Length: 455
Image (cartoon, rainbow, N blue to C red; front, side, top):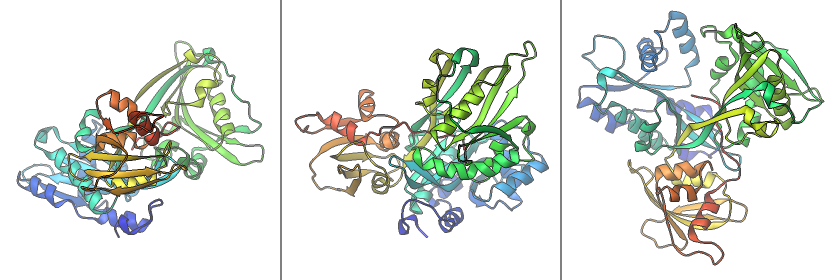
């Protein structure tokens, strides 16, 4: 079943299974075959999976996977579409390049969700670099997703410069925090609920349901694959250092669990009053849960610093501590997105203000290229149609699909991209605002996007 035959929003298992079973892209297969390479999907329960997993581990500079780790990974990887590039001349029974993907749900401005092809496990063996293998795989996966009617693609990256050439753009930044606990000083709310320690097994039960209730509120979040929760909770028997993880829950005044956190403590052997806490995951359904969990972590005994990553660039926590300089915050690119279907993508999200824009979009792969009219009403809902050669009134924005994708979650303003020379805006203003101001207002959003995981 094509995604064009479904309603955008929630993705069912039928659509996920159809995407997993879809063919590899013919154009990429031919290109790789011309170089003597075989491009094919493989099943998670096949013998080839062992070599595929070992190639992924090597690609990310990890150690060779043990039999226990292979079994645990196989059990938890059924949701993924696995593809490998094989060299018949290679002495090893393993692919020389790998890629994995699955059909997920991306939250967009306005608390809506859109189906998106999540891409992961992209590796190329050092022996096969600079042979066009990565390009063939990535372009092939994007064309396969587009052919299946999937309107978006998304990924988190290890090497950030690689993906702009395929139309991806950083759309949700991630913040890493280092907080000096004694200096911070809590001035935030003091909720009436309670914090309790719970087992790793219990937090593993709580987190998926909590996340389902939270993720639709923040653009950039995705539906977390079920197996990822074992990694956060420390319940994967094949993972290392799981015993270090501790879990707490927040229960509100009515007795309902509204938040949970998983963290680990690293002792300082030179000074036992200066341990470091690493926050592995924190989920808060309510403002009270958020405040209570962070206060608990910042006021732990014998702790000098709290470290946390994958936070928003606009965390309320900064305004809950007396000395904001106690927090050292670094920001970097995190969630990348790539629009495949302009009409479906733009009609799914909501906008910062009314107006009409003509979007003249270029695309290195030709997938999303074209001219589109976006008309946004007073409620922030958008209607989009392809223009072709038709003339339409409105402010004209000339940009690449990467730039359009960068603005999609509201993480960067069009004015910033224009100042950077990445977009061109033309046309007449409305008497009160110039064309760039109009376009920036329409495509903007009032909250920063966030993605709380790596995948």
